Length: 310
Ligand code: SF4
Ligand code: SF4
Image (tube, rainbow, N blue to C red):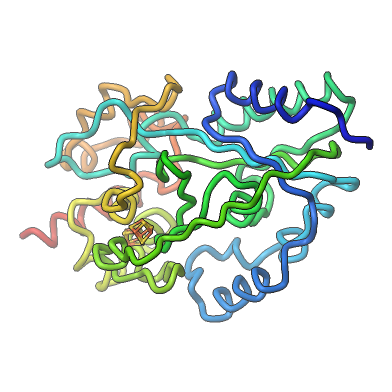
């Protein structure tokens, strides 16, 4: 399809209106060879650990045309999830992205409205990807200029930090690409030094040692001893490599109401989680990313926390 004069700024304005904090464009091309090789090295070294989904759909993951025939551009979107209220410091800690409504639901809805906007304006189809399709989303975020990948493995938006969730639209629409982000972490290695699992090495996360991956994705009835010894007070996820990052010093609360925590969530303590019934879990977390860990996972993690502090 022909390019549309001025459509780029119309899309960015609409994305902002829909609550996105960054929007960038890249040409839909197969992922570059060195990025494909780095991904294959990570998989063959077992760094993905319990995230076995990372092994699947390798061809689709590295070519957006397999997600949408006729794809011409990738639109990358980022949304701030930093909450306006935090859990008490002595409560079992949840990762900040899990405080409010499941970001998949929030992003799918709003990105879907952007896809409809593009269709209404141009007649072009777009496919929404919110972890629902295999995408190298950090690669595309860098290519589209919205941020760079830090040594903590997170996409860092210049001047805004990394407390953002990402999604993409693969679209038939031809868009003038933005300049890729060329910033780097420089000499800062704060996340590597502060990682409780010592899981970060040269920008690669060893998910076997990562408390975020293990407290959420591990389905075993007991966590590995290595993780138990380092779990601290973390019941779901870990934000240490983001909290210590200088780019997050000035994180500001999200403007998305669905990402704000409810009082019932903020009141949770270890005993309440241990005593929680499935019915209560479903009521509190049915629209939360926390449901991924399941009640059994949360209770296993609480037992690990309590065992450690005995
Ligand atoms: S989430 Fe926690 S354990 Fe995982 S890499 Fe970051 S600081 Fe380390
Ligand atoms: S803490 Fe430092 S090294 Fe780590 S991601 Fe942030 S800027 Fe990069």
